[in-house]
Structures are given as C-alpha cells and as structure tokens.
Length: 621
Image 1 (cartoon, rainbow, N blue to C red):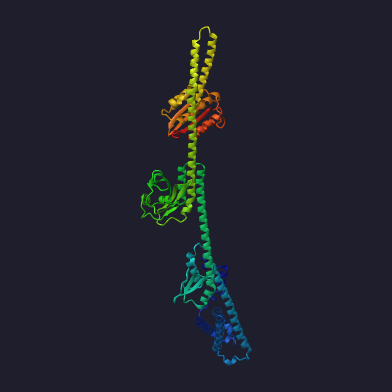
Image 2 (cartoon, rainbow, N blue to C red):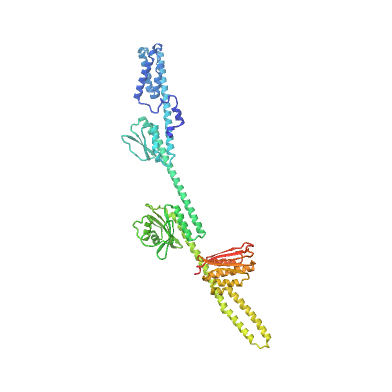
C-alpha cells in the first residue's frame, strides 16, 4: 500500500540516527517528567562510585545523555527542567552547598550556561526534525490518498482504503469517510469535507484523538482530503461521460453500419422479403435483448407478419384481425408511433399472441409508402421493465428504408407490368395485322390468282401469246402470295396461335437452312406472350446460325419447371456474337426482360453460340 511504503524522503528520515526519539506527536508531559526523574536517578547512582575522580562541578559530563533524550522527545522546557534538576542532583550527591554556586563563581555559571545551551540546541534540532517528519508523513498520506482517489473509476469503493491510510498515518484507532453530511456523537468527532460551499462528505474520527492530532487533521488532512475527493469525483464524472460518449458513438457506428448494409441491399434492388429479413435481423443485432417484427396491413382488416426474429413464427402465415388492444391497431388508428408497456389486461388476438410469447411491452412505428399506411415495424420485450425511451428513434431509420424498399418494389413491379403490357399490346397488334393481311390482302391475291387461272384456261388455242403472258403474270402473283404468307408468318405465326409452341418450332426447324435437333418438353399450352417470345428467340437464333455462324447443327431445348419456361438454343458455328450489337439480340433481350425473364448469350470466338432464356409463365395471365 502506498501509505505503508512512504516516500524516499520519509524513509531517509525514519532511518536517521535517533529517529526513534523524534516522533510527530510528543508523549504526555507526565510521562516526560517521570522519565526525566528516572534518568536523573539512574545517572546519579551510576556516577556515585567515581566521586573521587569527578571535578568539583561537571554535571554536563554526567547528565548529558538524559538531558539530550528529554530535550529530543519532550522539547526545550522539559529539557531545561531536566538540566536544572540534574545540576541539583549532582550537587546533593556530592555534598555541595548552595554557597558554592555564587555569582562570583564564573566557572560554575559557565558550566551551567553550556549545559542549558546544549538543551536549547538539542530541543531546536528535535523540533526541526519533528516538523520534517510530520511534513513527510503528511506528504506520504496525501500521495497515498491521491493514488487511491485519482486512479479509480468509482470513488466510493476506495473510501475505506483512504480511511485506513489516514488512521495508519496519524496512529488513530479508526477512521471513516462518508459521502454525506454525518453528525458526530460522544464517541466520534465529525469533520466536514467541503468543496467551496458544497458539502461533499464527512470524516469521522474517535473523540479521544489528542488535541495536537486533531489540529493536524483539521488544518492539513481535511483540506487535502476534500480537494482530492472533489477531484476524484470530477475525474469519475469525466470518465463516466467519456465512457457514455464512447458507448453512444459505438452504438451510433453500429447503427450506421447496419443501416448502410440494409441501404446497400435496397439500392441493389433486393427483393422486399430479403430486405424485410435484413431489417429484422439488423435490428435484432442492435437490440439483442428484444425481438423485432415487420408487419403489413391487409385489405381485409388483418395484419400479417412478414418477418420477425421471434422463433416459432412463420412469416407470411401468421395474421390476426385488427381488434382489441394491440400495437398494429393503435398505429393504424393514429398513423403515429405507438407504445404499450403491458399486455396483461389487453384484449384481442394481438394481445393474446403477445401473452403467448411472453411479451411484456412493445413499440411500433408506421411504414408509410407514398402517402399510404402500408405496415409497421415493431420491437417487443419480454422483460418486466418497459422498453428504453430511445427505442423509437433507433428504429426510425430502418422504417424509412423499409418504406423505400416497398416503394422501389412497387415501382419495379409497375414497370415490369407496364413493359409486359407493352409486349402483349405489340403482339396483339402484330396478330391483328397478320389477320388482316391473311384475311384481307392475301385472300384478294388468291382470288385474283384464281380468276387469272380461270381466264387463262378459257382462252382459245389461237391466243397462245396471251396465255403465255397470263402465265407469267400468274407466276408473279403466286410469288407475291408466297412472300405475303411469309410476311404474315413473320409478323405473327398462325401455327403458333393455332397449335402452340411445339408445332411452331417444328415448322421453323423444317424451314431452317441448318439442320435442327429438337428436344421439346412443353406439351401444355403457355400464355401467348410467352410462346411468341420463345418463337422469336428460336427464329432469330436459326437465322443467325445460317447467315453468320456457318453452323452445321443447331440444338433447341425447351422445358417448363418452377413456373417458368426454360429455353436454350446452341449451335456449333463460329461464335463471336455480341449481344450488345445488332437489333435482333437486343430486341430479344428487351422482350424477355419485359416479361420478367432473363436472356443470356454465350458466344466465344470459335466455340459456337448458346442462348438461354428463362421466362415466367405467369406474367401474362
């Protein structure tokens, strides 16, 4: 302990010669007188056998040790008394009369003066040594108290050790320090500890403490203790403030990091379910002692759990009606954050669910999407005490991200639906054009061709030149009809609308200049917009394989699985196709993506070309 070890200066003083004689507190005067008389008696008895060899008056030689001891321990006044008493004892023991000590005897007066000068010098040195000892002990005590009070995070815990230091330093039976104003009694004296005008504590010491020690306590120890105690409190307050700031900054950093992860997911266009799970997971990580929930209001007056950190609940399958007393109903009615600190007496399905899972308190914040109340984010606690007051503020940032995610998802869904509607409208327009061409112009061409054929057949034999001219005209008309049929087939294949995707693909394979290997597993009819997209993809691939890739074989595979059409077209041609150049592949990619699907083109140079597409079969229903 610091108080026990002391400073180097104090150690030097303690080990100085005769340091055992010089104490910070002098023994009682009665003890000093008794010791002085005892020493005089012992010294007188000790020199009795040497009376014959002693000078007529040399008390300083005989009694100097006793005078030095008394002067060092009890001071100059008792030392002077001891010197005079020693002189008298010497005179009596040697049979000297008072007449021998007359003013005319200069030698005797000089001996006595030297004797008294030694007393004064010894007592002065003793007082100086005693003052230095007291100063060193007080310095040690102050250092020990500072070591304890200024190197702790909790001042109250070290007060017993500080009190022990004071008791040991001042040789008190006991001492106590209280951080309040405590009154003294007949057994203990109360010394107030103050910092300015403020009372910051009390030092209690035994009422039997000597007056000199009590003076040291009041003048030296109490001011130092009060200053150090006040400094310790201020240091503790600063440390607590710094620790609170560090925790607050750490919590803020964790919240910002969690918000950043969720925001990144939202910015990447993550699915709402993925974003909702991320929100509840991140919130639960920040509020690890509490469960987190994300709920959606339904048109039928119920609320559905979309995501939660509470085990035992299936998101999307747990819902309850908005009646009774519960957080979703309060948020729905007010459009503002709501809080419930007890579900004990609450009624309704929501309150019953809360009690089933041991929830004692909860808060909820509304999720507003483009001005409409969409749902809410909630935090629930199973602890008996209410949720912290800052819970709503900590959840608010995640609520805004949830609203953004829902709005983004709605926008993407609306955009996808709009693109799908455009594709459907374009296909319907192409179908109408194909039907009008087929039922209108093509039929008129066929009727003209039939009439020309009939006219040619009815001409007499002598009009061979006219027949030849009509024959050439009929051949041109037939070629025009064939071209028109091909145009109609390209605009919207009639066979596709009539027989579905497999017959249309087989017809494409028959007309392809490159041999085609078909592996078709799509017997059921698909939505028209899906079949048209698949047909055009195969048609474009066959055209590219014959015109550009110089392929010798094309493989076409189709299958329906997990609510989507999976289509692949591969060839063994030259490869090197760039999906970002040329209108054909770009148009195919736009069409497939507009239907919510994905088209991938793999075409390494010299390695052939592979087109794969996945198209949802429910997009156009």
